Amino acid sequence: MRETLTAYLLISPQMLGFLVVVLIPLITVLVLSFTDSNLLAPDARSVGLDNYQTMVSEDPAFWRSVVTTGIFSAGLVVINVVMSLFLALVLHRKLRGAQLFLALAFLPVVTSQAAWAVVWRFLLQGEGGTVNSLLSVFSISGPNWLFEAKPALAAVTVVAALKTVGLKAVIFLAALRSIPKEAVEAARLDGASEWQVQRRVILPLLAPTTLVVVIITLIGSFQVFDYIMLMTNGGPSHATTVLAFAIYQQGFELMRTGYASALAVVLFVITLGLVAVQWWARKKWVHSE
Image (cartoon, rainbow, N blue to C red):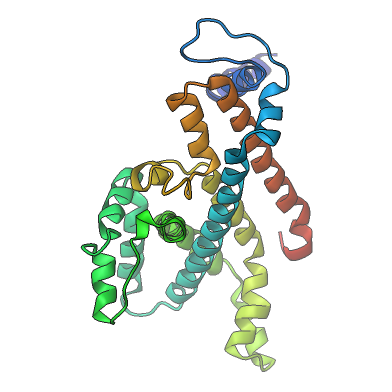
């Protein structure tokens, strides 16, 4: 009994933190999603599934934000994972200056997201922006990145993806260094080319790490808010209004906390569903544990 009580005492700070920071707010949001709660109104009444019905059948902005979130998340995951994996494969060769290059790639990770977004907002300005100035050297006329619909979404996606490339590269690099050298050497002795070694040996052995990185990146992409807020404020014409930013607009600009809570519940369910699908499908493409 004494050992059991000691064990519960040791885990109690973590359990208390989970209860206060995660579980209670999650239940509160779920309860509020069935009410017409408003920050300007003193009382809230139950409205059942009205918020969800309005969301699905009467609010075209909801479906637009879902599509925008899907495009943003897919682009962020692909760019982030591919660049991180490529960087890790290059650094794994232990070329001269590789450690310095890794340190430079890791600098954005330790930079605050707000500072990263503000810097890129200035770099992506119209004619006076650094990016367009560099493009003009090659006789390329760049768009007004943050004030045109498609370029704005693409720009925010790339900026968000570049932020954590260094961190994911470190994760991939650690996984690469744990791969048994015997497996690579055996493949080369069997006559495999460098491309075949990468494709048939290294990438399959990296599959568990890749799955973890994809899930982490996907979950993070659904939580992106500051890049949207500081770079485009959801514009132009709601082209960059993802679900997380739509929740902010409904809850803190329009004061509709009940409807914002319903949006938050939907975002949570979508995230949980995608992660569940990835874990269910992992056995089909993860060849080692």
